[in-house]
Image (tube, rainbow, N blue to C red):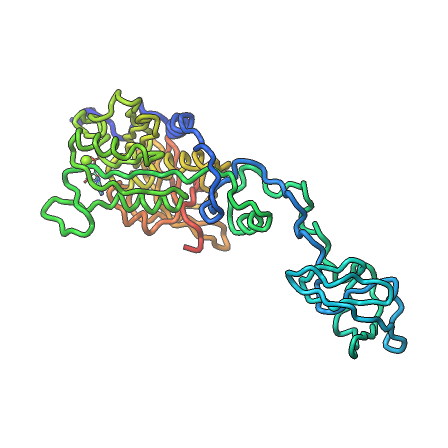
Length: 419
Ligand code: AMP
Ligand code: MG
């Protein structure tokens, strides 16, 4: 006769729902203090205040053509049959104050990009001119402002240039440089210290003895942090030793805005992260109703957010996506914290734990029938190649044990469709 199992691994009872766990984390994360950073360092960061143009952009009116700067009223009726002859009284070169001003019957030769000399209001392109000595014959009429790029044409002094909350990408960086904002006020990139816990771990440079495992989590986290815009530091492997872990964390405090460790947060009181920090420094350990990634530790050590992730590589990846990435986005002042989501049709069934949200690794692609999601393997949280084959996580909510082929699911895209 079958007996009831001691513990039902598929039940969500007593577990924290995923959204609630994320809210708990985000409610305790504050944006980093803004800093004035040089342009190249500000790239990728979010502006912490509105930027206003202090001066006109461009700052001076310039010529859009090589030719002659003249008075439009004098050349309005010029034609090849009846040209207007003017005296050339100087030159206007790029980057220099024009030689002289344009008076009645006068012209100044001008290069593309050179400032318009006083007195002139239009440019006659070189193709419409005939020169001989200090004379120029204008062969075609032109109107005021023709081929003149006015000052402030792009942005006028006092007008808004970029809004607070805007992330600095190529257009923003170029615009800030143009406006002379050499040190914009931005939220800096979080500096995150990564720790791998476990007696069984060795660096990827070594060949494992029987039972040893290469530390992969540090590298998954390194890349995920970089991709999110953070600055990771790998503090290395720490043995399952409470004092060793505390030493590493405390010695990295000043240089860290946050910590991420993997391993050692399971139920066992001997699990090292729990043993080191439980009820110390405000760290909580709880079980989230999700698969993979159920046990999670989160809190602050000396005011710095600490994320204690489970050890299984897939759990690390999914936990990063669900909790750490949004927290980093908030620290960086980003407005939108979540990955883009789409709805896709499963092309094979996915089974998951009844009471938990399952994050199934899938590869989505766009077809004539819409978005299709193909599972990349089974659900074990140690099967990391299933992550490498995927580009998205399909969200199978609690209450659904089997999502059938053909059913529609919500999908979080974790990489760009080009990759
Ligand atoms: P733990 O949560 O410490 O019990 O670890 C759970 C599983 O994840 C164990 O099989 C570990 O060997 C594995 N694991 C822990 N840390 C890492 C790591 N840094 N890289 C790869 N696998 C790991
Ligand atoms: Mg461990």
